[in-house]
Every structure is written in C-alpha cells, then in structure tokens.
Image 1 (cartoon, rainbow, N blue to C red):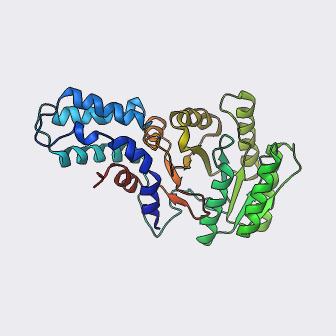
Image 2 (cartoon, one colour; image 1 turned 60 degrees about the vertical axis):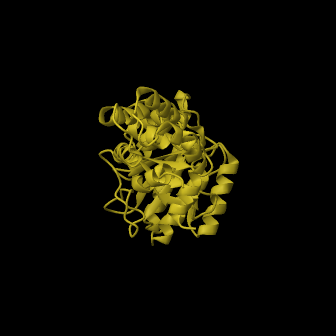
Image 3 (cartoon, one colour; image 1 turned 30 degrees about the vertical axis):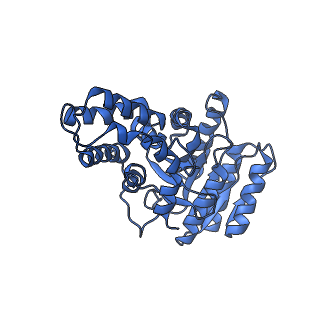
Length: 315
C-alpha cells in the first residue's frame, strides 16, 4: 500500500464523520441557505478542526455561494482550496517525492541536531525510530541520544530501535540530568562525525512549569556545544487527542521553540481535523504524519494529499 493509500485509510474515520448526512446538507439545484452552512460548520467542528478554522471555511462559502443555486462540485472545490491555504500557510511544504527530507533544516556543518519532545503516550519514541529510519534510508548517518532518563522503558525502547536500525545511541543511567545526556550526545556526535543527532526528551505534561524550564535548559546546553543547535525541534502530537493536542502544541511551542509537528497515530482517528487547527492557530507546520505502526509508516506531510484524502467525496 502506497503512502497516499495509507493516508486515505488513516483518515477514513474522520471522513466518515465529516460526510455523514453531508450530502443531505448540500443538494444540487437547491438554494444554499444559512441553515445548511451552520450544519456543515458543526460537522467540521466535530472533526476537531477547531472553531476558528471551521468558521473561516464556512465564511468563504457564505461569501461566495449564500443564496445561490448549489453546484456541489463548486462548493467542494472552494472548501478544498480554503483548507489547502490554511495548511500551507506561509511556510507550506512543497511535495517532492524525490526529497523526502525536505521539511527538515539541515546544518551547514554536521551534525544536524533534532530535538524531539512531547507528552508520554503520544508515540514519541516510535516516531523518533521512524524518523531515524527515514534518514538512514536516505543515506544519513544517524545517532540517537536517550534523554528520557526518568522512564527506563523509554531508554530500553530507543536502544532496541537503535540496534534494529544500526544507529549508535548515547545513554546514561536512570535519573541522570537530561541536559547532561543531550550534552554527551552532542560530544559523541561530533567525535563520530554523524550527519544527524536525534535527542529524545522526557515525556511531560504541558502544565508542569519546572519541566518546561528543563526543556529550555536542554536547548541552552545543546547550543553551547554546537552553536545554532538544535536546528529542528519537533513536537510529537497524538492525533487521537484532538483539540487537546493543540493545547500541547501551544505550551510546548513556547518552551521548546518548536519548528514543526509530527502528527502520530493519524490512522484510525475521527479527529484528523486537528491537523488544520494546529496549522491555522499555531503557525507551526505539520512536517510528518504517522499513518501506521510499522517502521516505514512515517511520511512527509503534504497538504494537497491530505485535503484530497479527507475531502474528495466518497463514491
């Protein structure tokens, strides 16, 4: 199954929620009224697209088509164009199948340092492994640093993945200061001459101020050893959490200065609309999406493919 087919399959529950009775809302030949628009806005909000994005999408329809005879294809064309615009923003990623790493900003001089953060249970460690696989497949030499020292299982899981992928890994005993692990990772990456260092951090809740300060400390330590690093800070969000994921993004984005989102567990959720809400409200691009449990099931986010998978009308 190709990436686009996996994406369509992953968004199936969201699409089912979106299109349930929607063909009774928009009927060709009828006059489009306020009642239909309000019903459709409610449908969008139920996918966790958020009130702001949903209102904007419906506002475009209201301006163009209110009081006019419904032409279904025109309506859906307008909806898709509006959502694509929201997703791409000013920092939208242009899809290039020959450059699967294009969303990442690489350092002019190795190593490129990628900091990965997120709440426990979001799929953070697995997402790191998937990203490492994508990088190594593209010819990059990758090293991992297991900075989630407060959860022994996280270090063990990342070590297992490093062995499977053939990546070097830097670990320290349980309870070690995560900033010191990050520093050691930078030292080892410089010595080994790797292309990319991916640093894991402890999963945490966004309302724990002391741990937010810890993230800031980790950034300072990394920058001291490798000026300008981290070059990317990716926030892993569980798509199934919906709007709560947006709250995570807002708090983590401030503390860790996140440059992009990895939206994990997009397969099987009815809340795929949160992708639009994140991009529209945060201005942080979704760079990768997880569409399955296999190591190869991380793909570059593409707004055009996402909109087609979600909004193309079911036959």
